Length: 413
Image 1 (cartoon, helix red, strand yellow):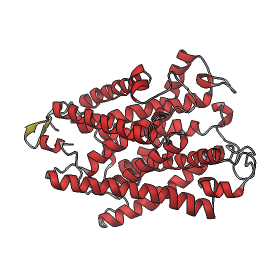
Image 2 (tube, helix red, strand yellow):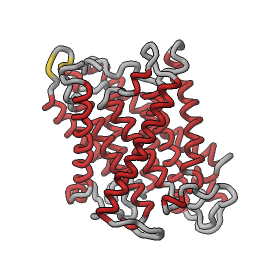
Image 3 (cartoon, one colour):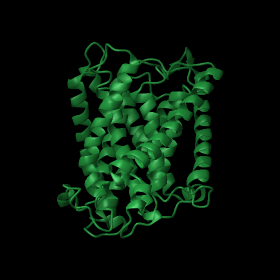
């Protein structure tokens, strides 16, 4: 149990707040250069920018959580070493993003296998509605969905299965084995939750390629935003239980301090159940605010938007969980686990709602160039949320949370 001391000294919360302010400015600069409607590159179309950020975040998670590099990101490093390793990690993440996005999806899988992953392949195929903007959005949507499935399996595998069944091998064997296993389950998840909808994106629905969305009858939408909402609500509890509950109650199923099949299955099913319960609760809240959605409804009345908005709420809470972990030392630390877990969870939800308020306030219109209101066409809060989360994770994992390492390292479980 930690009392909030790090390396024998009190954690400097003022420095953490300053660090957060600096990170916010970095995210704003990146947003203005790459995403802002009046910025430089204007990649926020929105799906193209959305998918790029999702793949970049997946690259960071791949390197840090699946491959397990660096081995001990909580270990404080000297400034020079932390900066050098942080830059290396950021560059590697960008390199992985470019390789996966443009070489693997566009020029390999899309060209020789599944065309909807590739803009060049779709343009070459021709047909009704095949224009540069349309095919870019179709391809980006498919890549975004696959990245979402990968993020889910990467994080839940790390929390539940851990190093199993390769715990007796070196970390590179463990890392690369997990890459293939996580990718395998991501493909299955993509095929079941997202592929049926991608086949409906085109002017001529690919009904012989994708099955009818199995969730349409009771979700009142054929959109894969249903799956996106469920996955993100599930990830909400994967992250909260990992960071705020310190791996409990899943760690009670450890064997010799390692994950195992039983722990992994229980973690997966329990967090999925919690995600579905969250979907049910948010559905009731949204219905109370905007009334019940209906088939064919537009904007806030659309069932598809309700599901993606659940994912957006979950994204805000996940972002705040990492902010609280890295910049506020996961306070409180000196209380019994149950009590500090409850307090952190309440803080996490409240913090997520604070970010929600910011995004939909006049402040975000001034800072991010956001269109006022909810459910605006072309507006997705998850793009900014994932970009922010990516920067936070790069600092926390690759830079070993430098310069907060001057305040030390959090001790205890």
